[in-house]
Image 1 (cartoon, rainbow, N blue to C red):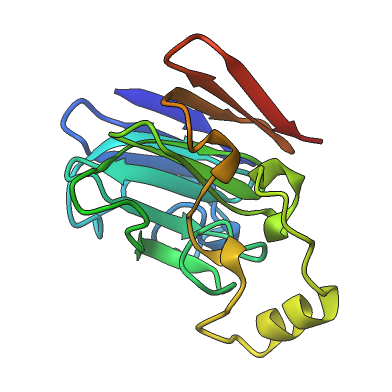
Image 2 (cartoon, one colour):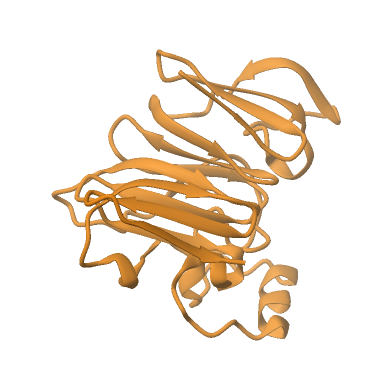
Length: 201
């Protein structure tokens, strides 16, 4: 069981792997459609296809790792934080593409304000979202804001930007990561050898 607090809402993972959310409903952050501005009591996210083993909430979105080692997400996606390959919000869970090799599975997630992290069973860390900013640890140039705005406004469903999908963090490729955590604008990873890595603002 786990509880996680996002921007004006909360998500609860039960011991049976079910997810319940409550709080403000804007931008799909609760994982279901509702005509109300807020959900005052915990409500189960009924459209989840399988049980979850880890969950994390960002400012207006949720990331989770399923029992089968897959990633799912919902909510605000204006900076690519859902990892779905586009910038459109989702009011229901969407499956995130499989970034790790077939022999491994995802086992943990962490959500910052607008970026996500994931950890696979081989100790590889992945990041995405935040419009590719420093909190991803990828060291890539920032995208053209006009292109990002156009992609958002025209609701493009497939984007070439690396930060719209989980991408392995190259700087950590030679080490086995055992723990990840995300702050609002920064990220942290701990390795099997006890080394601590931090990046972002």
